[in-house]
Image (cartoon, rainbow, N blue to C red; front, top):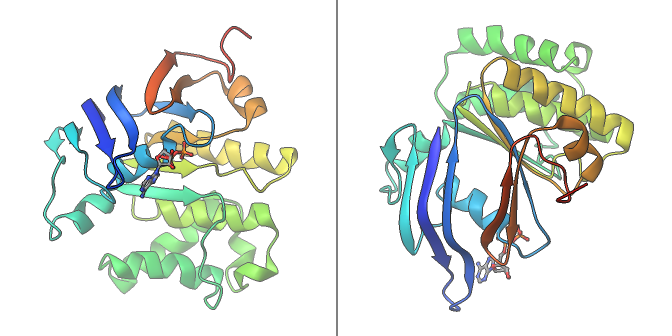
Length: 228
Ligand code: ADP
């Protein structure tokens, strides 16, 4: 799905945020990225969605070298990646339906496919009855489900979730994880950054741990902490 070959990112202030990263994520897999604040997790995401370019190394996505993409080619790349954030980032002046429809309009989908797909994804996240509500009328877990629906509606190859349960209580977090599991089961590759030990330990997926910009652990069916 994607590969990092000896990727290093040094920001303009000379700070090395990720150092010599080698990482291969298989198509259809589900992986967690863990590590303390400042470990380089966000930089890893930014490298993947082409918000920053690496200083050294090579990045492949679906076999294509995306290390340097012209600004003209970046939008096409970003269509292949759906991102879900901790703070949902919904458009508060648009209804739930419009939030999702807007994501489809932005990539030029036809009104017909919008009318077909928005109800589909709303049903997948169990919120068909909230289509005409505004985001601030919904609970946090519901808002996150809408954000997930928006991220999947254009059928990306990869979903990146950046601490998606960070603002949610444990029970709601479990519901959100069920939705991610289902999305993954249907074939979408998932990469999730999280501090949620309970979720990582429960899911038994691959765990990639970053520390000071380096991968210090990479285990299949891992736990949040090594050796627990
Ligand atoms: P994490 O997401 O794990 O908290 P980040 O990737 O955000 O880690 O940051 C890794 C390191 O890079 C941190 O020490 C941070 O201060 C530094 N950093 C992040 N973004 C920038 C930037 N734009 N300019 C300079 N340093 C940055």
